[in-house]
Amino acid sequence: MTRAFVFPGQGAQTIGMGKDLAEAYPAAKAVFEEVDDALGESLSALIWTGDIADLTLTANAQPALMATSLAAMRALEAEGFGIHDADFVAGHSLGEYSALAAAGALSIADTARLLRIRGQAMQSAVPVGVGAMAALLGLDFATASEVAAEAASDANGGEVCQAANDNDPAQVVVSGHKAAVERAVELAKARGAKRAVMLPVSAPFHCALMQPAADAMAEALARVTVNTPAVPVVANVRAEAVTDPETIRALLVEQVTGSVRWRESVLWMVGHGVTEFWEIGAGKALSGMIKRIDRGAELRAIGTPADIVALMG
Image (cartoon, rainbow, N blue to C red; front, side):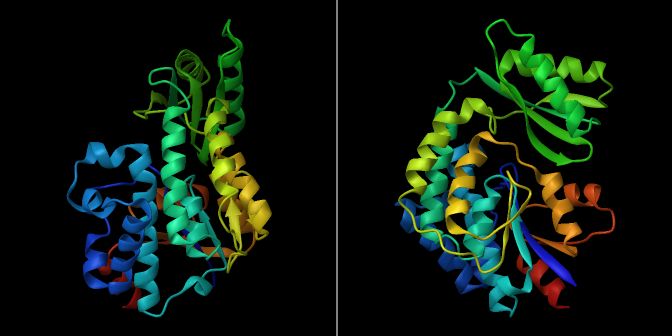
């Protein structure tokens, strides 16, 4: 059986995530301690007992979700499952950093610091209220891309509107200037979308408006060591596996303004024999997407000690 480990992105965060892993597995607890040390603050306290509004801030959510995913990986390793039990790893947006850390391409400390910078840079790239994102449900990627392009071209000032996340066959997220995204919602409904809704996000991720954040990440990534991953990483912007460290570095910069090609990434893995996907970390959002992409896929979500017991049983 060919298996992939996949790592969730922003939106999966909950207060208390990973706490039971840290209590059950010393190696999982050590991950949270390493992230706290790298950031010079107790992010773990915020994750476990803080306020959800604070945890949801992009600069906190990104390293927090990575820490939870890596804690789950360490718990799996303690029970005899390791990175070599996967043929590929992949992650959704920030989850790609978790995948790279799990595969040893980045250290946990560097990953935590990179995600803190990434979160802050993405948040500050566009003034609050200028950008927006919307989910278009029931349109395929090609149609959603046409809708985004039409919404952008309708603007007098050359506004941005791009297909940002190709999540599954019936869910595409568009991103850009608020007025253009609002136009895209109306255009999508006219094109037959089942639903088209504005998303409660703090910035327009994965579009050209994120260029200042891409520049910040290029600078930050130039300062860290990127190793060859232990297993190939399926990159968001390529929707295919990569192993070369310098390619990985470049694609992480490109990822900030580029589309998350999740549907294509899953199809690429399926095309290369993957039949089983383990979602490592908080929530089950990716499992739902994968099931809509490939109904025959076998899915496991591993984010708690109970999940690991079930795996072993």
